[in-house]
Amino acid sequence: MTTSVSNTFEVTQVKPLIGAVIETDKETLLSGRHSAEIRGMLEDRGVMVFPQVHFTDEEQVEFTRTLGKFVPEMHGDIFKISMDKAINPQADYVKGAFYWHIDGTMQQVPLFASMLTCKKVAPVGGNTEFCNTYAAWDALPEEERAAIENLRVVHSLVAAQLFVEPEPDLALLDQWSRLGTNELPLVWTHTSGRKSLVLGSTCDYVVGMDPIESRRLLVKLRDWATQEQFSLSHEWSVGDAVIWDNTGTMHRAMAYPLDCDRQMHRTKLEGEEAFS
Ligand SMILES: [Fe+2]
Image 1 (cartoon, rainbow, N blue to C red):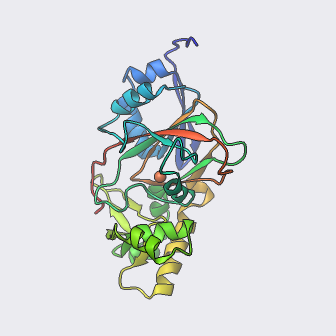
Image 2 (tube, rainbow, N blue to C red):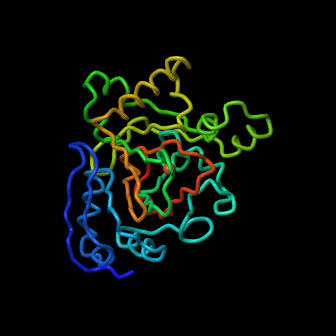
Image 3 (cartoon, rainbow, N blue to C red):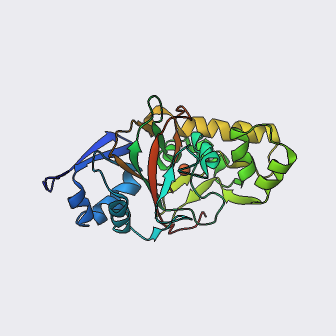
């Protein structure tokens, strides 16, 4: 397939508070000419969509490297997201992505950004949804901000996996528990001075709060952060690339038939600041 080099780079906002679509071609992206602009837009827009750029794996890695420090996956540079265990032995683990989350809440320094490219679409469903957790914080009423600003939340893999498998046997529970817990601020003050909410399926409980109240607050804030004005849903076409600022967004995959051959390839950028 030949690709014409047009050097276009047209940015359109998806919604006032989230998302940008960049009409361009892969040669322009790989040149690195717009890297600084893309980095800036990532924090500002949360999610950037590059329709139909058709990166190969090597090009996806190369483009990711233009934006920060590339982090390889456990088994190579690319992680193949698929429910087919022949393609992705970690298929069961991927089911956790059906619930709102931030990548890396079990670490002190989460990934800065992740990129997905679409190789095969699901016949039905399979959108990826994002919400802007900076914008969600910014829009909270002042008294609610004051009430939650200093709260801390315990995160665990157990909390996240219970969404996927609500009735594990003891052996499975013990397996999840081995990763332990990670206490993080509910409100992250970034080095830029901006603040974002740290939520998602790994949230277990708010430190020092009654369990029912804790659950209620976490669900209330998730409902708040994922409202229409803070979120977008990307309907994939083969060849699309999407990158998001993992430190200022949450994301999830929408349900799709588990026996279909939907396939995404992921690359990652190393985190640059700790939750604080
Ligand atoms: Fe994820």
